Image (cartoon, rainbow, N blue to C red):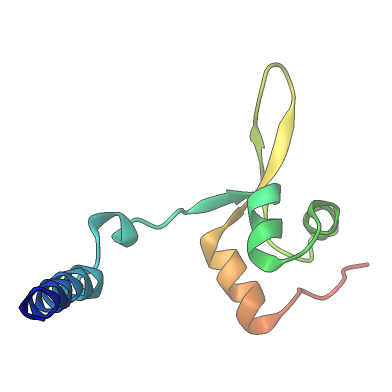
Amino acid sequence: MEEIVAILSDLGERLSRIEQSLAQPSPTSQLRKEWFTVAEAAELLKKQPFTIREWCRLHRIHAKKRKCGRGRTTEWVISLVEIERYLNEGLLPVKF
């Protein structure tokens, strides 16, 4: 019986230490990514990558092109600020 009590108290101490470490923010949680690729933005927003690319192309969200790979290849990137704006305000109106 004493052995079980000792094991339970040890588990309680370990659980307390784990809870304390989880309560303190880790250094990596302070780092936030500033720019997201279409695939990353699609995953965050739970949309298809095609939809995100179309929004970029039609200027429904603010995005910019960056060089990738070799030559003249470019890809859309979306800022964290724009993703937050979209979540709060929605898509920009269509421009004709």
